[in-house]
Amino acid sequence: MARRLPPLNALRVFEAAARHLSFTRAAEELFVTQAAVSHQIKALEEFLGLKLFRRRNRSLLLTEEGQGYFLDIKDIFTSLADATDRVLERGAKGALTISLPPSFAIQWLVPRLADFNQQHPEIDVRIKAVDLEDGSLTDDVDVAIYYGRGNWPGLRCDELYPEFLLPVCSPSVLSGAKPLTCLADLKHHTLLHDRSRKDWKAYAKHYQITDINLDYGPIFSHSAMVLQAAALGQGIALSNNVLAQPELESGRLMCPFEHFLMSKNAFYLVSQQKDADSGRIAAFREWILRKRRRTGEYLCMSHVLIDGPETAEYTFIFAHGAGAGMEHDFMVDVAQRIAAHGIRVVRFNFPYMVKRAEDGKKRPPDRAPKLLEAFEDVVSLYSGENTVIGGKSMGGRMASHMDGHTGVQGIACLGFPFHPRVNRKRTKANIWLV
Image (cartoon, rainbow, N blue to C red; front, side, top):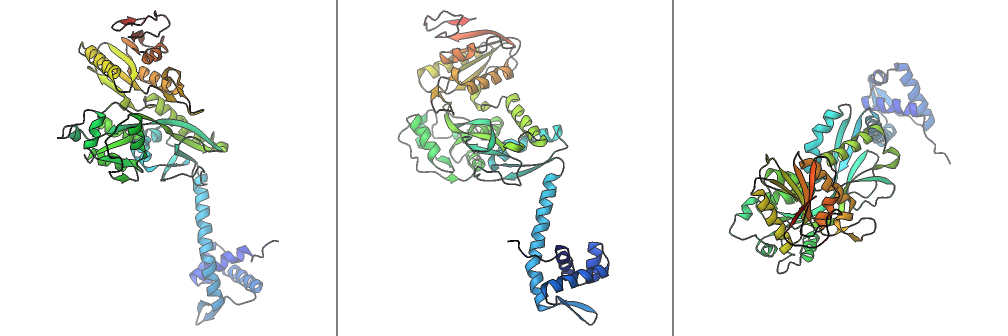
């Protein structure tokens, strides 16, 4: 059954007259005559069957019923005006509201936002930092950055960065009295936790680290706070690769170890399916995906380790695993020996086995498309006129996929040659150049 409402135009006139306590000022606000205001008030009083105003000594007063009615409807008019402003604001040309976690906004988006503004000056960006997302976009948000596993039904999801967790600390910690030369040395230091203790526990389990107190150390609600505490020398943080990048590049933080943990989570760009290809949302998506690829950030650059002079005439780019043990140490020693000859060495650190999001099964790195894509980004970023790429075992297999890449002069396979044009006989000390 239809609800019985008063004449809405008369109600609007009453709200203005009651707020000003003047028919004349209400008429001026509404751009009508005073007689029109009187007519609308009379119509409303007839509808309600009671008097709303009374006059006294040339002044206008509300009756008791009129005062109560005004108090009830004034908030409704305020809410209606606010809702209208929001709709008009969102409908304005170029308005784009982005919702994202505070730490991602601080560490990644805000430092790069000037580039987007320069390329799209017609788009008015509004940043809305939120701590948690429930998998649904509110009406006041155009596009968002979510952290999770990409399973948000009804939303278009573009993966931005898979998550790698790596230990980071202040340089002052490395030069302190307590040693930090191997994973076992973590027991001498305070562990800093991001939202919970589960990440450090997973890291310790993965690398079989014992004799450390995983139930001790402060817990922070935001990743940016954890990074700040680590930069101030308050302990060792296990940080997201993307969020730690600014501090790693500035030297405020360092990675004491090359051992990192690949997470099941990632950062995603999400939007409503029906709006995904609209002008400003499509422009932002194109920009952020291009920014990710062009800067070589698909994997955090902290996993790209460089030895030798930056101005070297020759560059050697090779991939190797991030695990522990003699093989890892051997690859580090190879890099240092090559760099000693004035060659720039770029090492791409990768996990030995990569879980695929689709089925949760593990695949060797050379069969993980996104990891290969990341390695190709690194090759594109660092290759010059005289560049050789390669690796050992799985790293050699990854390198073989780069054969014919622009700027690459050859493929080098160390130890166990997997390149199809190389004899597969296992040897220990030779380097094949293809």
